[in-house]
Length: 302
Image 1 (cartoon, rainbow, N blue to C red):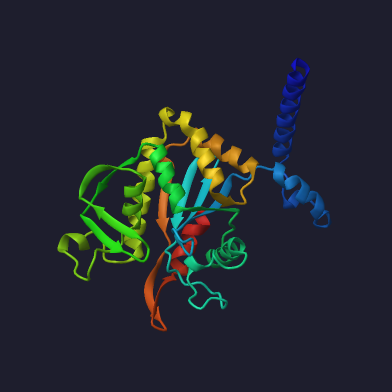
Image 2: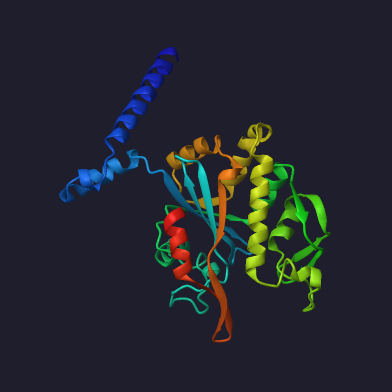
């Protein structure tokens, strides 16, 4: 056992030194001949790439649609986390879909590849990994973290028997458990077609208002839970996640992200919403991406 320990430490230190040395070489396309693509591929995993783009998707109970979709970009050098919310009704160029909306891509054949390729092309940025989990997992994680305090801006009442979705939250600052947090995140408009003056201050029925609520929740979640008290629960949370998640992210990337997370400051979290506007095409409402406004944001932050 002692010998094994000594060898393990030696290998770890040696490996760390080698990785550091390769990093200092700053291997790049300029330093490798075009004919040496195989060498470049071998060395690529050892060269630090500060930014990692991960597409995060949350599915509904029936796993028919990805109702929440965010592109998260973490810079492990500056510990800056940028998040771009993508409206669920965003129109995509995909002739294989009867109704070409981004939230229906994942459930298609090879859906994870389809949604990553489609968004990478549309947004003009590389998506390194994807993460998908069901809304049920989200509820369990929030409960494991003892809930999140949120200032609910207005009374929320909505019922959809087909989805078994029932939202009933009262206005005011309160602790939301997993079930109530889901209600807060999924609320978009009240029962009926009548909007009170107070309701219109926060919700007009569009997905953009719901995205604002989701981003607010995310900021509060990080602000309230990014402390030593919840580090001891990471094992239980990871068990929940790994048993109920679909992803192609590598262990190496997870370790890099976790190392960066330990030094993360909530002031370094910046949220954006994909620019665009609603439009009706063939009697279907879509969100049309405005590339002119969006590309500069993506180029700079993602």
